[in-house]
Length: 640
Image 1 (tube, rainbow, N blue to C red):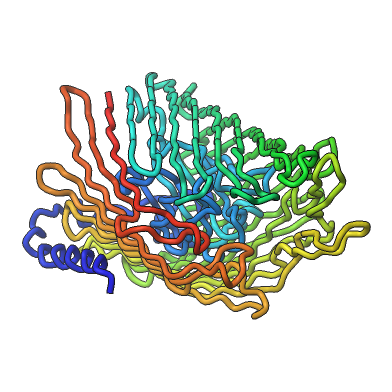
Image 2: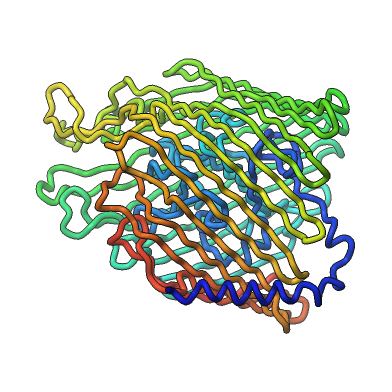
């Protein structure tokens, strides 16, 4: 028996036996605090007890106290999420089903701007790197399909990253982090302005050496500018621009087709959002964004230097959206909108053409919130899209919330979502220049994926105990899943050519819950658990989740202002992506620790912290032969 679970038993027992002694310290406000309001699920502001889906909120304080360096690491605190990466330079996360290495079925938003890759298989993990953790106000994660509100990319859920308003970041902040495994981070931020206009300029650099023994060193550099302007009392304008650069180690020594090298990615974005408050219940919002990503990843073939292995190219996306929120009556609210996006990718080696391949899509969306009785709330919504390659599709949702008694809500509903193929899935044609040797081609026959979800839920707010409990029971059936086949028929070419085809159906059933408890003013405990069973064709055992996963986190303020965080994560055996039975990961156990001390130097606020990830020792990550070693690092932060 491993000793570290007893650490949590001891800590929890200490907390429980202390509740009575310290209960008198809790004020009435402590007991009756309001539930957080979220915007992610239906595009309407709703408290957690009335959302048409299960939501996890990770706020700024938890982000800091977790000691995380990546957004992906924070998702370990969300039930149902699996976090890994095909090497240490590419941390990624998947909800429920680890079917790919890129997170293409989760929509990631940063202040409403989608950050998936138009060039690289709809990849979201690089997009999650494009924000500084110090700039984040909170992360709202909808656990379950939300295509009814956001379209094709939200098949498995939405990760909505909301950054801080510039009015809250006046002044300056700097931090440095250094430690084992090549950890070397720094960040600087300055904010200025007044009530009518405020701005923030943030920059940072993050690096580490990745997994044990692999060529996966990573350097992420960022620069972001945000401005918030209020030209009139009922008008707000947000403008953003930024650039993220990633240098990542790739490949293996002695591999002819995947030799050691360094790849480079650069992402540039512009984003604007205008809001006008028409009345207390009516608002319009117009947003526009532009993204351009550039990849450089080319190396001569080890067996024939005349042949170039090239994964480089460029992707662009333009996105426009109009949204109108309105209150129709005291019992009826609605939101509706329309949008347009254009995506293109240019890569001669990946698409076998000198011109860009592209598509455009028009969309309409809406959600109606109806309260027929004080105890009942009905949400009905849908998303219609017109894709220039694959035609139209529709993703509906119907969800009912029943307040069975004050602070206790039951939730039930169904949703159907559709994921359209990415540009690479539609038109990929991988060659090795200067030859016409082909390793992958798009068949032109790939159909959209569909997911039908049924959900039962419970949300309880136990005010006297300062505890909330959110339970989700789900059944999800996927059809026409995009799957990589390694022996496709390509006229005129050798038979060992890969393509993506519509694979067999699969069904996932399970239960997950999250418990948040503050037994004392200075103590907060999180408990997440997921139980899942996947039913599929027995001939296809690739990419299966653990049958059980648990996270327990303790955030404790100690005497003399010290702050302690302890996080325990465990998952059962699982496998990622398209790997075989030999690549099944054994059960994983990981303990993360953080101890921090805040202090002042005159008017300057400061904090010193030490974080140890995998404090209980190395464990296999992604494949049985890849190891994440114990990693300790210190952070020093100053706010002026």
